[in-house]
Image 1 (spheres, rainbow, N blue to C red):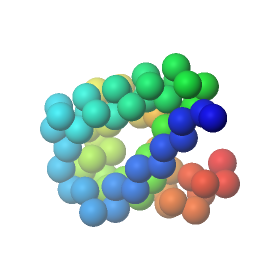
Image 2 (cartoon, one colour):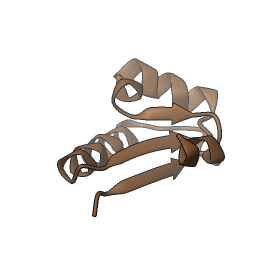
Image 3 (cartoon, one colour):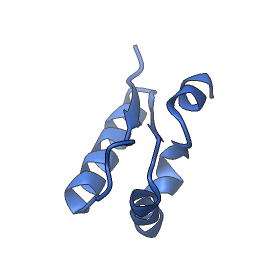
Length: 71
């Protein structure tokens, strides 16, 4: 069964390299298992970090969780 992960970041206001590394590692594991990772409810401060590091190019970010689950 493919690995599928939806991360709801609605309560996250700060992300450092540990969070970025966790997402990249999870993305790689999911990709190896023919799965996917997506991020929902991203606040602007965190979205900026995801954009600056290029994580948003690997992992699709959605404005809400329902949108993530129907994409």
